[in-house]
Amino acid sequence: MKQIRWRDFSLVSKIIIEVGMIAILLFSMNMLFYARINNSMQRMDNVYASNTELTELSQIFEKVQDNMYSYLKVKSSQALLDYYQNEAKYRDQLEKLNEENIDDSVKLLERNIRKMSETYLDCTAETVAAKRGRNVEKYKRKYDETTKLYGYIQSSIEELNNLMFQENSNTYSVLRAVMRYLEVSNTIIMLGIVAGGMVLLFQVTRKMFGPLSNMAETAQLVGQGNFHVKMHDTDAQDELGMVTRAFNTMVENLDLYITRTKASMEKEQQMMERELLMENHLKEAQLKYLQSQINPHFLFNSLNAGAQLAMMEDAEQTGIFVEKMADFFRYNVKKGQEDATLGEELEAVDNYIYILNVRFAGDIHFNKDVDESLENVRVPSMILQPVVENAVNHGIRDIEWEGKIHLTVTGDADYIRISVKDNGKGMTPEQIESVLSGNKEHCNEQSDSTGIGMNNVISRLELYYEEPGLVEINSDGENKGTEVVIYIPV
Image (cartoon, rainbow, N blue to C red):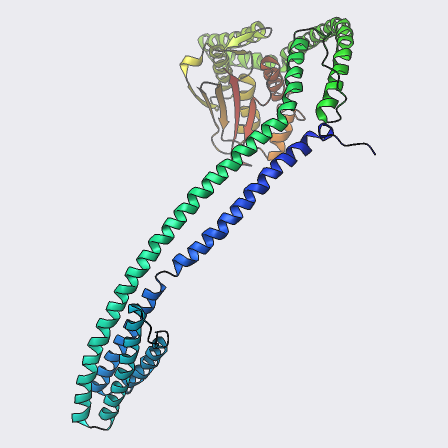
């Protein structure tokens, strides 16, 4: 049979055995201390019980006297009933007093109180009986006797209470000293056990620290690139032995792995660079494709309106209209391949609203509230005009009430918030989800539109800032208006 050596135990088993021994010792000491403390506490609880009983005896004795006096005074059945009840209780309490002749001042005083009380109760019974028999002379004489006895007994009870309190105080002081001794002795013993356990634990686990320190030094050398170091071989079957053998095997394999990894990293780096270049080219192509989507119908219809205006009005108005048209399309063509400032975007929106109001006789009620300090921030071009266009075409056009569009620009440390809000037809949650997911282009490219819809704006913002969720759409439902909010990262 193979002999089991201490070093073959697992680390967990060794620690459990060592800590378990200390825990058993501590538990045993605590149980012993608890039993001794509990016994002392019970004795302390009983110290002043005799004073409590004497106080209760005095209170009942006083009630007997008061009940008898009440009956003599008013001769009520309730007073008589209370007298008999308290008289019975007082007799029960007297049974707890000493009745033997013992050479002890406390016991002798208890015996005297008991004898006087029995005489007192006999006298009160005769007093009550004389009162019930209407013997006035007798119950007055008996009442005087009971009153004298009542004074003697009360003073005796007070004297006995004082003697017992003094005796109990001495006993309490002794018990307090015993409790203090138990506390100090238990603390010293507990500290001794803890100190001894710590010494034992250190002695037993000291052999674990050597291999761990060696492993830490060897691992540091390996971390510096030296893969030719090893730990000392061991035949121990615990976790440290297994980790030592596994560590040596790992170091041997690590050198081979590093060599192979270096050979493949260069190829992988080249592949990643090619993939990144292709991804950048793809994003650039997508951005240019999205920026090029402009519907010529808007240009044709707008120029048509300009021709009609020239026929009906003076050349000055026509010139302003054509100038606004020229500025709008010049901005569109110029900025289609680059970004713009927020101020330029707002100017494009103003030109667009002016053109529409010429075409539709001033029916577009538009106002804006802009933080002018943000107008120099650069943003993707043609992102605000399509949103305003959607508010016109899908929000306030063909409604039966006066349509209004309000644009606000505010900012904080993280984002610039651009809000385009109308009081038009509103949107259902399904419609909002469809637009934001790109399943539905919320514009009509075959009508009076620049051709740049919400999907185009959302896609270009995500490509430009490489961040999703920069557009949100809010609506309380049908005929309750819509708000489109664009967040521009600062």
